[in-house]
Length: 211
Ligand SMILES: C[S@@+](CC[C@H](N)C(=O)[O-])C[C@H]1O[C@@H](n2cnc3c(N)ncnc32)[C@H](O)[C@@H]1O
Image (cartoon, protein in one colour):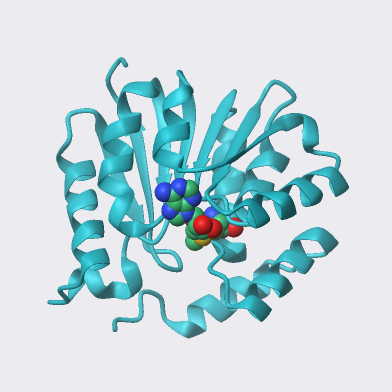
């Protein structure tokens, strides 16, 4: 396994990002206790920043878990913005509902339980798509959702360096799937793409074409 960022750099960055939001801290604690993969704080901050810059009206999140990444998006939305949280696990969505209610963010969100590939198809003109579902589904997911993206949409996909495995001769289903997805995003005429080597690799793509 390759270290994507030197642990000293990670520690330095974490040290810069002191957090006093009790809901975020609680979710970080819950994820750690349950060994549940959230985007974590450094990527959360990047999501927040990109959302503030983009000012999307419609954010669709494929793989919301219990709402940690969604919370970063929702807090950055303008009053006209809305986020659709999708997860196939009802208990995760129930927890996210509670977090959003406690944070007074309920009005900015729609909560959906089920297969993200099916549910996302119900939305047109998506301004910001966040992908954090099962890794072997990334290519199918972006293929299904590309026609639904607004021109100038932003696509953000987590774990696109997959513990560094994409740069090694590792052959397993998830590594191969992420590599196929990355190659698609970098060669497709529909997108201009880059990957930020933060945490596990955050792919950012700008939608160039009309839907
Ligand atoms: C890595 S976790 C999401 C973490 C979340 N984005 C965060 O950072 O707080 C992945 C989630 O995607 C969900 N998931 C995976 N494939 C899915 C699919 N096809 N449709 C809906 N949910 C899916 C899983 O149930 C799991 O909760």
